[in-house]
Length: 137
Image 1: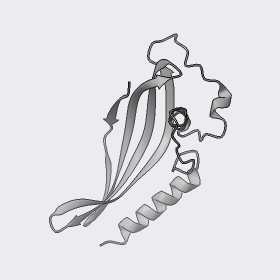
Image 2 (image 1 turned 180 degrees about the vertical axis):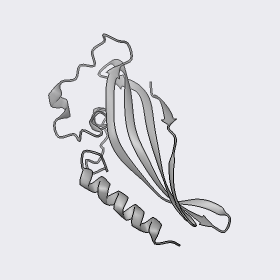
Image 3 (image 1 turned 180 degrees about the horizontal axis):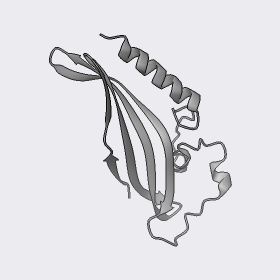
């Protein structure tokens, strides 16, 4: 069983003429089987959209996702997901449970995704995005 829902928060728009970047906090809820138990993965991300007005229409020119944190728990309280702390060795804290369920399902997920556990990379993204916005069209 795989089921997911996306919840969006209020966006923050930084506007400069025909350019803007938009910060959009999101929470994704996904249900799946984990080691024979129905579980819910909750993933928190911040989406950064670069947008430009071309003619009279706003278009997305770039989208970047920043992984903030995630949780994994059984849907029915008291059930056991049969995971041990060592299952998460080497997985990034900003998206460790997402990586775990991907690997458990036979897939892979890059350990180089943008995440708040690497604040210097997030800061660099914001500096580059702000410079892009100030540069105008």
